[in-house]
Image (cartoon, rainbow, N blue to C red):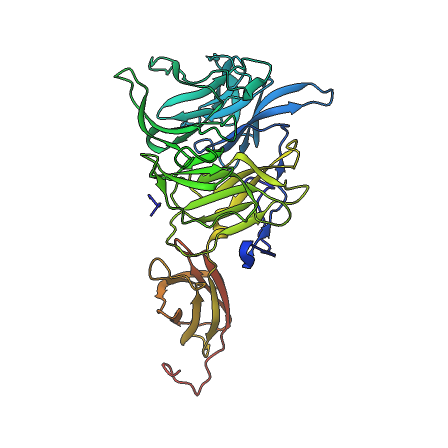
Length: 492
């Protein structure tokens, strides 16, 4: 079991259509609503700042005169400050990371790491962080209290894909005086991913289809023994040295760090042990056949797992499922196939908010020249719940009333015995009544005494939802009549 514990104008609307999945089984696929178009003409990395409630994205902007400038932008999804924070830098700009406190934002330049203090949407430049030259696109990760980054300068005209060049993973100095330096070297470009408890993944790109890169998992240490990283495990994807090696697109740790999901261009989603890199069985429904995997993400609250891809037509480019595979429910499936939504999820283009309530997804057009940011509300992936067959008996002012109904929980067993909350409203008077238990068959009975004065009474029935069901509410209107002289008190 894997469980460990809006952006305005860009919320995806789930309005429903149907599409055929591989194997001929019909599954619900909903079209994505229009996203928020980003000003960047490139995308390298995104990160979510839970403290500042922002989504930070690094890329280059092309101006009307053809000039190109780097820009890091922070899109507000809650909290305080301007809706968009940004900083202008030299191009190319690649990679972005944020301090866990949200007080510092880092962005990769070709000859250093740009460093900014951040407060409520205001960015102020600080002294740049030294770093080796990079012309191939940096990646930055803040994990275990340290900032790690990649560097690679091409060694020949063949450029960044030439295996002759040497790249590195470096670590920046800390305010406490912990030193900077290079912690490892690689002959190809390296991708980084951080995880809980100071976990760090290094994933080299393969330089040919027969190359078999070695993914490594580490934990950040206090460095007292002279080593910043503790080696935990490594994995090559080719079976016994044969077949294609790892074709890395993205990776993410589960909330407790026990599982590492890797989006592999040839294999789809591969699950590894988060502490030793051993292969694990994959219980998650895959993306549709023919869909190229591009991104994976676990929610920090331990509840959700998302897979993103690049497909065509109305096939699902995104699935959002429960991280706990024992919850037997089909994932939410979303297709991006619109000029205002993008056509595909970009590599490393998905991150959850810290509370798991929102999934941020960057999509692009087919050419990779335009980008959109979408905010997916994860509650849309919960099973629906509803009140049905709600009715009441005689409604006489000052007399008892009996309300019956059924709570429909879409076939999934609730995680705890459900209760119906009840609020009675009569004119200016609002009264919260004791919760009503729900029987195993979903039925419930509410018994109450109506107000003495005849008129309109409203009962608001509520279900708060649970780990697998979305909340529900039902308003019941009761028109009460004056008691007739022939009806004695206490008679129903």
